Amino acid sequence: MSGRSGRTGSGCSPTSGRSSFCLHEDRTGTVNAVPLTSPLTPFVDPLPLPRRVLASEEAGHLTVRMRTGSHRFHRDLPESPVWGYDGGVPGPTIEAERHTPVRVEWINEIEGTLPIAVTVAPSETNDDGLPVQCMPGLSGGSRDPDAASLPGFTVVHLHGGLTAAPYDGWAENIFAPGQVAVADYSMAQRAALLWYHDHVMGVTRFTVYAGLAGLWIIRDERERALGLPEGPPFEVPLLLQDRNFDEAE
Image (tube, rainbow, N blue to C red; front, side):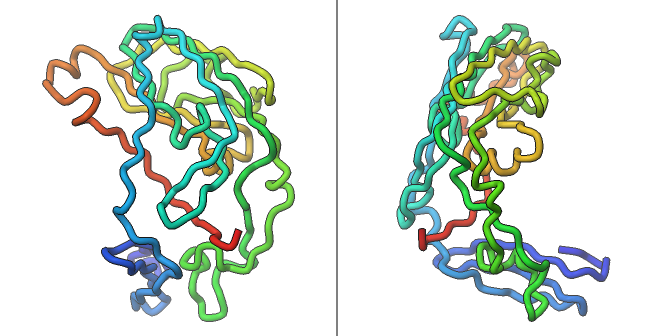
C-alpha cells in the first residue's frame, strides 16, 4: 500500500476457501478488492520438505548437481519444468558447523533453455487504471524472446555468507553446462539461516524463479545452548516464493 503518498498501490492476498483478492488503492485513497482469476484451493498439498544434507556426515565435501527437472506446485496443476539444485525445488537444505570449512562441487548438468515464460507488460495499468500486477499473466504482454533463449549458464552465491572473493559467486564468474565450479566456504561466522542461489549477471530474477535456490544453515554451540529445536520434526525451514501459472500450456 502507498499510505499517504498520493500514488496508487496494491497488494495481493489469498484468503480461505477459493477466494483470492488483490487490494488496490486508487488516487482518491479508496481501497478496492479485485478478485483474482482461477484461485487454487490452499492447504491441500503436503508441505514439500527438501532433502537435508549435513556437511559433517560428508567430511565437509559436498557435490550438488544443477539439473533440469519438473515439479508439481499444486495438486490441480500439471507439472512445471524447472531448473533445480539436484533437480528439485527448492534445493537441498545444507547444514554446516561454525568454523568447520565446507567445500562444494557445483556441477552444471542443466539441459535446454530457460523453462519459464518471461513477459513484459505493455503498460503499468489497464484501461481502468488497475495495476497490471493485480492481473498476473493477464496484462497482454508479449514473451521476451531473449529470455526464452537463455542457456543454462550459472554461478552460485551463498547469500549472507562470509565467503572469500574467488568463491563468492560474483555475477560474471559463470560456468556452462558440462562444467564444474569448486567453492570453499569457511563458515567463520555465527549461527544463521542463509540461502544459496544462482547469481548470473542480469538474469538472477529469472533463474531463481526457475528454481535455482535453496537454504543453508550454520550451527554453533552458542545457539545450541538456547535449547531450541534442531532439525526435523520440529524445525522446518521455509522458503517462500510468489509464482504465476498459465494453465493453458
